[in-house]
Length: 257
Image 1 (cartoon, rainbow, N blue to C red):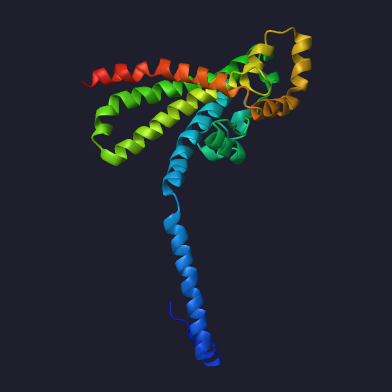
Image 2 (cartoon, rainbow, N blue to C red; image 1 turned 180 degrees about the horizontal axis):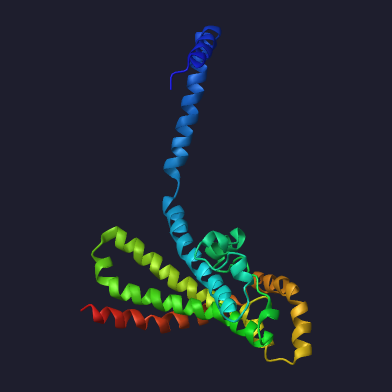
């Protein structure tokens, strides 16, 4: 858009600036542009692209996980998650930025917990256990669905070139992250889902006493994870679950032949 004031301002700047100063300014500008160009061309775009592609599977996994918690709680009589707007597939409602980054970098992460009031359940202990178990189970179901989709579309993806490779990578990543999220959350350490299932087997007095100290479990969990002692076991179990579900792809592929 034409702006007389802007033209006037530029004209005054030019009149007050010597030719030498103008040459120096443009020279430094050229150096900066060339430097930025060198940095741009030197970036490893494959790393950036892979990280971006991994974000979508991670968002899908955690969204499905948290939505399942909220939906099962709602079906059992607790409207807390529904009233908080958490019964949605909108990932923005569920993500915790740090937890998402950790999932991408370390294959260990978390989402924003779905609010649940166990007092709204007819049987609080059982309701809490079922609601907690819904998360890992939903991730196993999601992985199974992804394997089914991959098996049915494997032929078309193989013929799609680079696009097919990218989509195949995203499907593989989604299935693996979903299995990993299910396995990790079944660990019986608060605040993970496995602890709520395990605690439901305890007598009432011990159950509610342990639930009061649940907030400190996250610190213990971070310490255990940081020592990397669990990683080999989690990887072994995750790969076993992943391999077991992979037969769905093989079966689905035979349907397309």
